[in-house]
Image (cartoon, rainbow, N blue to C red; front, side, top):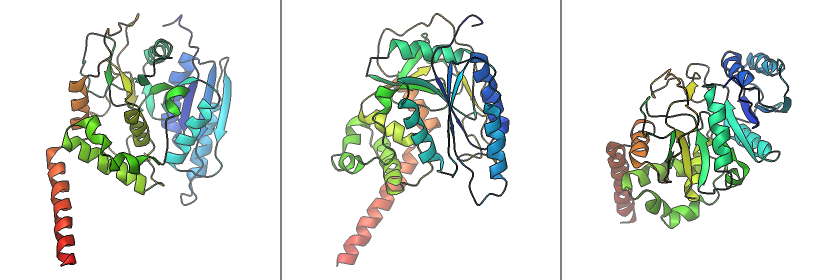
Amino acid sequence: MNTYQLKTPVAFIIFKRPHTTQKVFQAIRQAKPPKLFVIADGPRAEYADEGEKCAATRAIIDTVDWDCEVIKNYSDINLGCAKRVSSGIDWVFSNVEEAIILEDDCVPHPTFFRFCEELLEKYRYDTRVASISGDNGLSGLNRTSYSYYFSRYNSCWGWATWKRAWKHYDLYMKIWPEIKSIGLLKQVFLDPIKVNYWTNIFQNIYDNPSTITWDYQWTFACLLQNCLGIVSNVNLISNIGFGIDSTNFTSNTRNPYLPTDSMEFPLNHPPMMIRDDDADNFIEKNVYEITLLDFLKEEFKENMNKFHHILHKK
């Protein structure tokens, strides 16, 4: 790795946490990308000290000391996580065809960058693949004897993608009513428990366009294109963002402080492009927490609503 020279642009998403931003920045600094896109949201008016925190975070970017073109997209006002991240990635792909993307709390192993870059090149024109993730997500378990496996899911804790894939992204999921009306998720998941879970998720996002969530919309886009996500067989990302200063999460139910491991090169590519159903089931159970109990609760609620509706008509 000491002689490896990264050529792929890196997109770095920051906000108001200089302590986590500094750690991710140091990892980027070691990789020395030739081009660094920086996406920053503005402070929220209701938090008196947030302007100072945002300024301290942005100041870290000004310490770039390697041969690098730094391109900044800083918002003066607070757009919120959903609009800021999605519009920032839109901006990145208005400039380049592919990129490695890191948020301010996702600390990558040094081998993460080469892993992404080699697979960005290998699958550059293969539209079956939409994303490359360094977040193993399996609590440290290895799924395969190869360097990576394929999944229907696309973790955004340290990832990479192409402009050709991101073009399908829509923050507002305008096609959702049509997808719901024709029952397309039943063809994607088959299992009614999973169909129910994702129907509720997508409906909630569609009904609340100002939500702080942006990544479920990316999952939605990839599912609609029937795309695969590449997932590293070893964990290459440590998420250090859980705590009181986090925007979305104050605790981590996914094995906190999961250590990273080194990816071995040359990569050992799987000879088949079939998603790992066991790995996806693990993610659904342990990350998304899709359970039969939740399904039964939703069924009960729906049946009660129908019952009250019938009574009301009478």
